[in-house]
Image (cartoon, rainbow, N blue to C red; front, side, top):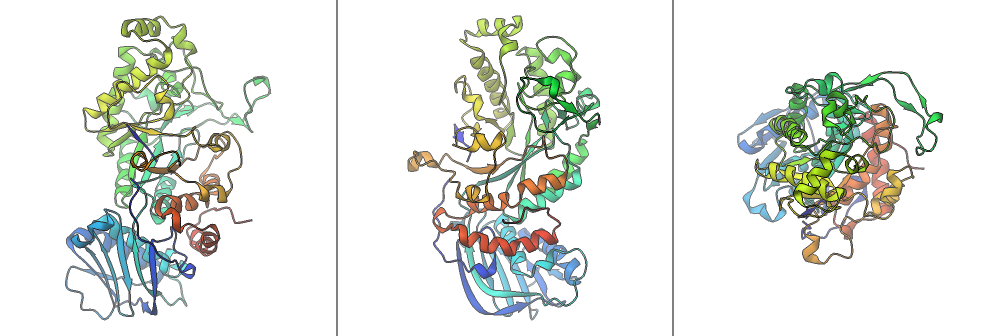
Length: 509
């Protein structure tokens, strides 16, 4: 069992805040002078980094007006940006890099192409913020300060989540979100594609999942505070929905892969499944025709534990696996009330047949079935920490748990509290109770954005940024180098980049 959230031995270093690089690199040494980017600058690559070289040229072109040549030659130009893999840098891991800037040359070296990519992202932050614009900017001298940076991430899992089930988000925004993850050296995009309020991915074998499950007739207006008096709920009477075709999904996955981001799809089961049950009522426990849920919170309608329902979800995952090369497939598992199972002849017969002692054990059995099914196809199941409530027996050894309830204050923030930026920055993914051996099972950390109340991309951006910027530094930078004052000094300058990128960030107060 691996708990989500491989601590690495890191180099110590001193950060120059005038560089405003986020996340803070492990080791930075300032030099003298600057590198001047000109139309004659050449990007030189080896075969492994050629796509990154073209990507860098594409990124630099719109604002500078320069169409930089990309070459596989020795790099004899007066000013060269050299990108190469280097087997001698294995100690930096697959994502570490070394960036050297002098007056005549920029060199990025890394053990793997991913490290070169992160070196390029650091280089972009060393240039003036206007480099992120999509049209020529007059009057800017495109210089990079002389510097030596050696850098590597603390955690292998540095993630961000996006719920598109409660509020559907256009594909164009999903790609923008991925770009922002890459800029901050995050490498996992957790795409929450199904829930009670909407099914957002095309499954060709079961077309009603999107024909019916992707659309709800209206949405709750205002904050939902419990279920005591539902007569006070107000709805907007505006139909809401949308879904991503399989071609859309392929496009997003390829876009992310070019930025060294793994897209982790989430297909919820057995709870948070009312949209699926609305499309195919036999998946539920009551046989009743349901509608796609129009309010928020925890719903009683969950999948039944029959062979047919399990085969249905495996059919769904078969198409999901064909679209997502990710090793990790998220199956949810959170907030699955068992009241319907307690009165269901099918569920109770299953409990008796298996010799189980509770409905929680029944959910664990279902999760184990899916875990083993995924493992047989070379994949690993991820679930929220509720998947452990009925025990760990049967879970494949490569299964991963996302703990969202075990950190003090985390659940309070999830249900409507205020999460200050300083609290995010102070977060420590490795609990102090773990010894050094146990700590190696903590893969990293991730931020979640749920969209019951974030109805459009600008709402999402305001809630995410700059909190996700802070979390990116938590995930990348050694704990001993973190300093909130230093971070906010760099963040103030980083805001200029976010503004150019049209990010609706929340300013510091």
